[in-house]
Structures are given as structure tokens and as C-alpha cells.
Amino acid sequence: MTRSFPRSPWLLCAGLLIGVFMTSGCSTVYYEALEKVGVAKREVLADRVEDTQEAQEEAKEQFATALEQLMELTGDTGGELKVHYDRLADALAESEDRAEEVHDRIKGVRSVAEALFNEWEQELDDYTSATLRQRSERQLRETMRRYDRLVLLMQRAADRMDPVLATLRDQVLFLKHNLNAQTVAGLDSTARELQEDVTLLIADMEKSIAEAEAFLATWNS
Image (cartoon, rainbow, N blue to C red):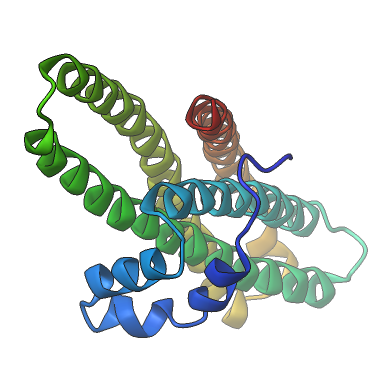
């Protein structure tokens, strides 16, 4: 995956402080501080879209791994139930981490986009040329339209993770105290249903990832 914007050293360093600013409700201060060192909001937005794209790619692969571990557990006839259970539990924990990261990345995209579009809207009144104002306004509306579609796909894919995680948690919790061949055999239908859910999740992830790629290509041009 190629990056549309090179990562600014200032942006990377300032990123270490983002948690402090965002949790304290000082996102505006954060963006203003970045602009003072030459990092514009549009660059931050591009960077965060890429980060979300990468997080979704990692989540997609991890959820596929979790499903694979569940299928291996339900198909175990060799007496290695504990081994497969431990792998499934680890896959669940990793999937939860990946899901949390995706949700956090989307929040970051929304935050900077809101700040960028508000600033852009306000600056329309600063034009003295009606022609340039109209051009800028058209660009703003078109950018917001593309952004709205991007975030819609990102959020839809992210929301699909939650019911999959809930199902996996239930299975791991129940198996923790009922790890036997009979119980595992009863998971077969659940595993098939989860397979369908993960297939839909991966499809939505791929649409979101592709939309991010298209958004960044247009943004860069």
C-alpha cells in the first residue's frame, strides 16, 4: 500500500501527545499546535485515513484467523481441545484489540475532518472574489460528499465487528468451563453462522479499504 502523503517528522512526534489532547477535549489546540509547526489539517486527515485503512486491513486478517481457530476447534477429533481452545482465546483477544484500534482510528478521522471542514466553511466568507469563492465552495461540497461516503463505509465495516466479537466471546466463555467433545460438537452450527458473518465483515472491510484508497488518490491530486 503506497502512501499518498509522506509522514511529517513533526506529525509523528506530535502524535505521541494526541491521547492527552483528545481525552482532555483539546483537539482544537492540538490541530493549532500542529499548524504552527507546518502540519496542516488536510495532511493530518490524509494520514489518519491511511492509518484507519491499515488498521482495517489488520483487523480483516485477524478476524479471519479467529474464525479459522474456531473451525479447527470444532473439527478437532484428535483430543487436542485445550490446545485449540487456547488458540481461539488468544485469537479473540487479538481481535478485540484490532477492533478497538479500528474504532479509535475512525474517531480520529472524524475529529480532524470536522475541524477541517468547519475552518474551510468559515474561510469562504474571507474571499473578495466571487468566482474563487464559488470554486472553493464547490470543492468543499465535493470533498465532504466523498468523505461522507468514506466514513459511512468505514463505520459500517467497524460495526460488523461487534456482533462477531460478541459471538466469539460467548463461545470462549462457555468453553472455558465446558471443554469436552460433546460441547465442541454442538458448536458446529454456530461456527457456520459465524463464518457467514465474518465473510460479510471481510467484504465490508475490503469495500472500506478500497474507498479509502480512492479518497486518498483524489485528495492527493
